[in-house]
Image 1 (cartoon, rainbow, N blue to C red):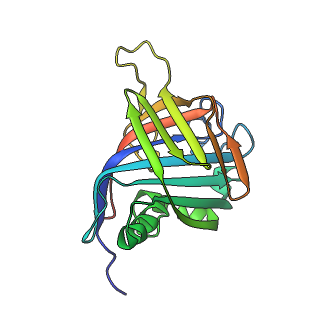
Image 2: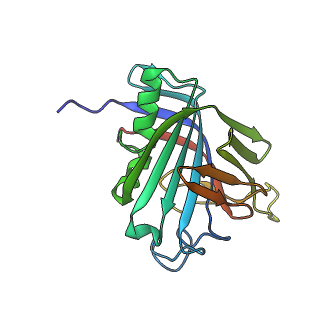
Length: 210
């Protein structure tokens, strides 16, 4: 078997799941992912911007990606569905690289989720807009997704609450956030509205190398 392709990337990420604040899947008295989601299921979009990155000899600088995860019940019990979206600006080698990274097939942080996934809804190339405006993160995919999160209100002078909850995307540093009004996703027969629900964001630095 050939050695896996070495890759690394750095950039930014946010998510807005369907749980009320604060998400018990990650922050509860129960072990992570074993608590009941507040709505009985979990619909969570993860949005990514790659500032710099390389998959072998393939540069990934400036590209965006999105991953939609649906868990029908307690997350640790599995049976998840996954749908991935890759920036339409990506050429064929970049598309293949990003699909492998963001579905977990190429190792790295997303591989932590693969044992829980039973349904792969595929990878689509679409125009993905990712914006950072002050402390607001937002992303758009025409006719499919609009998501925006802001940090939770806090008395801390930084205006942000940072935690290290061990989330695979950014284990050591994650900002607590909330989804804006109008946060929706509509594709693959699924319609989500995560307005006012739990959010997170962080800078990311990923690699499949130890």
